[in-house]
Image 1 (cartoon, rainbow, N blue to C red):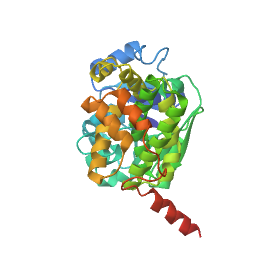
Image 2 (cartoon, one colour; image 1 turned 45 degrees about the horizontal axis):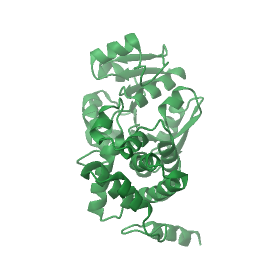
Image 3 (cartoon, rainbow, N blue to C red; image 1 turned 135 degrees about the vertical axis):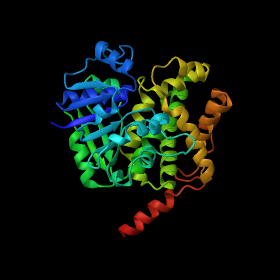
Length: 352
């Protein structure tokens, strides 16, 4: 029987551990402290975060990284993006060159502006880099824990590695598709959180579905522009990790980032909102990283810019979002330093 190590007792980490254990795999969930591990073993998950969830018999919990990773065929990293590097430092000595390394975090590292797979690669031996995969998609954890159908996309530059991870992670109600565009899949999962913050603001202001559809669509184009600038195929953003995740995160009341946007529109302070939450809204830190990246690239990202000013400069939500939605229209694929025209032009010329 295959063994999976899950690093991180986040809601998403616990969800993946439960899904894979219910599939019949031997799963070891790593908690950072023995106190947390003991509490989870004795009482189960936090009922406020994960109501009515019980750990399957195939799922064990340990605070020992050595024990968690011993004889594991794959390790899933489901930790907050800002702690990814420290977590990799804690577990890297127990990795093997045959072990799949699957990033399930959706964020970017503050300071370096790097994707999680890049952070992982910097902390492990070069010979292990080919085993790095990225898991992303429209994955609201409460729905998955309820057994509702869901899908995700697994990205790896190596098709053999992608298929191995796909087979391992596929469950009866959890379909896994594959892609070779790690950059696009990873950025899609991170960037949609920025747009979800704004979509929550649109909802909180009561602007209606037409305005939100506009916001989401323009947000997707902005996501594609940055992804292309960083080396992605923009078509990846029309898949599960881009459009799929964007729809789920912008529309569902289960979305943490959407919740933050709604609460900001109500006039609540960001610090108070974040303090009230049991889970991390990755879009808050990601917005700062994306805006800094756009500045360095001289890339036009009006939605990200406005969300940044609301979060970090105290800009008025009503005035800022109203101005953004009322911006003068132009061609949908145009923007300073955007390469979308040239990309699709190349594809048309190649076809002919």
